[in-house]
Length: 203
Image 1 (spheres, rainbow, N blue to C red):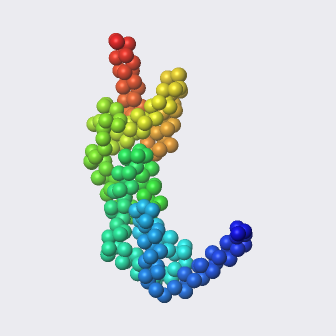
Image 2 (tube, one colour):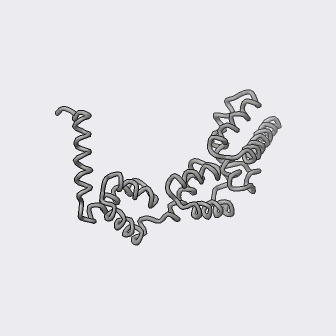
Image 3 (spheres, rainbow, N blue to C red):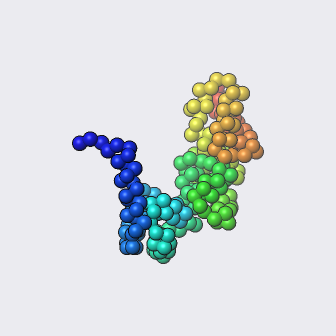
């Protein structure tokens, strides 16, 4: 069976959007939202944008959003906390980067500040994944330490110490850590590496 041409796909997409725009059944829009939520947790803004871009009537979109909020399928506060926890666990980012990401997800700035303040005050991450010296540092320093620990094998392939520090700094900066956090995390990284080398020399 021949694959549809680009023109055929455009025509099918146009027909689908026209069909969506004429939709009157709220269950159809609800089902579309549910399918969108199957992959992962979403913010209110993400779901609203997805449904609007699918050309569903604005009134049905808003009714669907309200119903999803009632059912607790959508919760921006929970979404923001989960996003930050997931980042800290799997892909450490600095506070500024997390703020930008959540803002792009449509999370209210006040809520973003609240969640990031909670992160700054809490200590939910596993310190064993970072450096011992960074254990008592700020949330950003601990996150930076974990990122450096995960990238240690790559960094240690760089023989020149100065170049290794430069690469570590660039890595942290790319992930949204400010200059002070970069310096503090790298200092802990270097001290721990030096201590490990000294320990190895004693054997």
